[in-house]
Length: 161
Image (tube, rainbow, N blue to C red; front, side, top):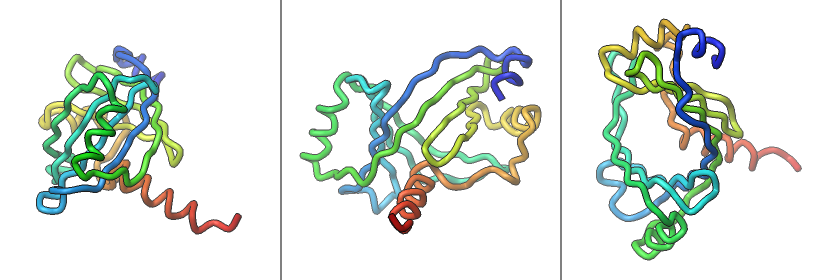
């Protein structure tokens, strides 16, 4: 995929590792909001993300997402705990972000349970951009990383030692 992105003239914007904390807590059950704190490169900086429920438009996942950069992710963890949120599980991710044609972000993610490609950008260009990279929206995963991580953790617990 990296070679294809280079041939297409995509620009590598950056690479980093993140530790993702997924929460259970007050207020989530009414709107199916997910709350995640990403600690970037294991340092103090992080991003707090609230995601609304996903819908699919022409094979493209669409969801409202609000992000806030935080200077001290560990203090944010403490604050969320004081507000009644509990860490449900943690997963790590290595990410490389590319910009394609100046309008679409192509993200290459490697997690313990697989490697994935995400495309983000204007809804009107995503299907064609995905096809140009060899992807078919009919085969796109519907599950979020959180769901995939939960399934992976459950399968790992069931394996005999």
